[in-house]
Length: 262
Image (cartoon, rainbow, N blue to C red; front, side, top):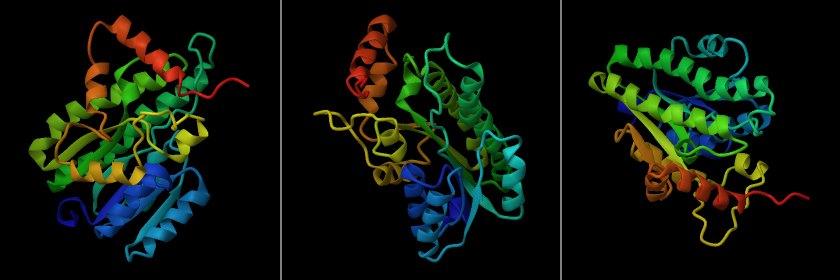
């Protein structure tokens, strides 16, 4: 792995959950790391844990929706031979009915999941193309296969991410750069726990962060899309027709996962 994707990896959203699991697995493989995250506590905790494995780690405490985040990132990464970008920062920061919601808050979801992702991918992808090897792993979501109320913008940006990854894969595969969108379903992460999702429903397929990171790295060369955590059939079903029945049925199932109003 270090020969193809090293010696440095950049992980956006690398402080907890799946991002932290990627950091640990890449450190175990001998890659040095640049970890980017908003929250200083989890960021420094993960950095200390992976440093203990003998790799070099640099941290960037940064909100990726801040003005020109790439400038801050380049101040740390310029001069490093970055062979892998993991973009794991695409959380949903605002759930609300669209027509009564705050457009500025919706824009924040778009800026994180699309604008920031494009900026980092454009920068590091160009460097990888020039050197003739590398990998770009974009963390996606089953939400991107179907519209949902309250998170219609989040679902839409995740759909964008998948289609973007497919086009990017076609553009870079002849230049030795692997591109993969890793599609996640329900995963036991701090972000999902904070959202109040009920992950104890009998029969619900819940993945663990370390298993997701392992699967993503194992299939990085199997782009453009890999559906992780045993959710392949669910993704196939969500991508089918007729849309009316599928969208309504999925919405009813999702309601059982959400916290009950107090």
